[in-house]
Length: 238
Image (tube, rainbow, N blue to C red; front, side, top):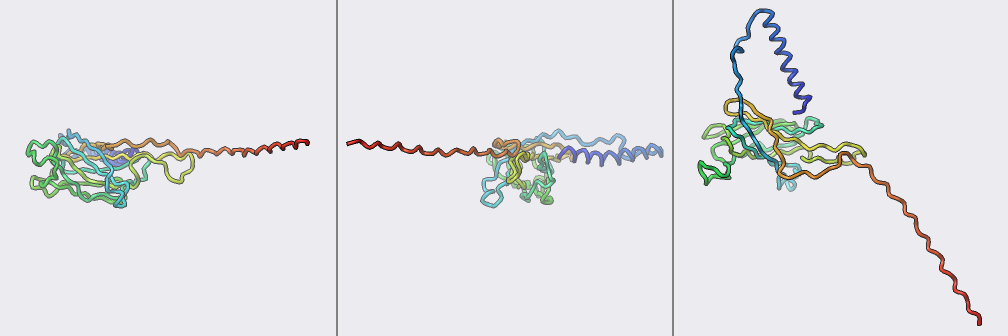
């Protein structure tokens, strides 16, 4: 989430809270349910990576990304966000409506299940497009709706532009390069506490791109060399 969006959200939350607190103090009333109430704390840690989908180009989605992550505690839901430094608010073009839960490798509970898709938990995703994020949640699980700790969540998301930084086509010299995307997940653990965002990093490095569109180099005009006239042969006297 961009800084200005975060500040705007904090202002929207802080101003009503200040007014509500001030009103309560003026009337001598205490707010019910606030004394001694503790918000759930989450110690969840998550990590993951991104990979370019090998079949994206053939499917007409050259920007398609596959994402994979796991967390240290069970999670019931997550939000995946895509932002850029200079964002227009519409960085997601499409996404998969579901994600797989994959048993980790090694898998001590049942080694034969290592690396296979879970049959006990599934994930559903939804959201508006274009947008900057989608919401996903565990469902239809015989073992509950939570994704177990360290199980891998695998899904795909299609950015409106390529992940890596690039120079906009047809732009004037000096136009800044479009920065690379930032893909993050915010998770909700099995206590209802949220943690993150955790950035998902690409599994391959992005190519280096110039900071701005370069000015085309002027071609030097080469002077055409005139051929020297051949010397005339002198006629020999008889």
